[in-house]
Length: 182
Image (cartoon, rainbow, N blue to C red; front, side, top):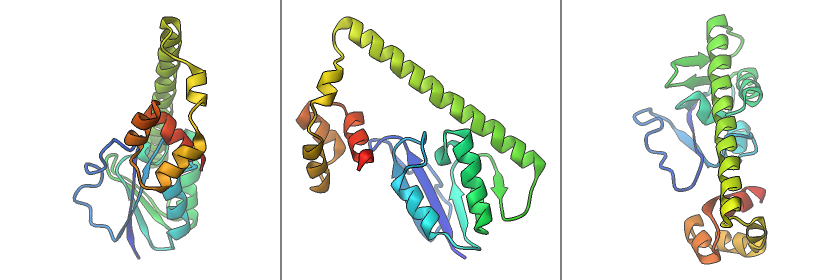
């Protein structure tokens, strides 16, 4: 029976310290990428690692997933493995065959809000790109010109994403996308 932390932030520049501060755990899995998909290295490792009787601690529901379907599937996967899942901010706990209609409702509602927030972020991003294009300061071609192999080599050398972005004249998000493709 192991206490395990799952921590996720959206970018490498974000700090993870506030999540699960003061919670005693034996092992921590940390992702620094979007929660819009379950294709995350640490999440995959966590799912492979957990065993019946373990407890996974997550700061808040939106740290596990920003897609309601993914969230519900992940909760079911943990429960089917006999793993307890604790969301500290919302004070919700899910375990094994135990069902609680009120907790299930809260999970679905908060998960739907997280999905809505992600959709709003994407919409604002699209609007920003369109305005940047209209001002002539955004170029999809420039983003495509980034040498993916060079990025991967610099990442493998341990260079921070922000430094790679500066060196190659692109955004940290471009570097993050290339890193996530690997």
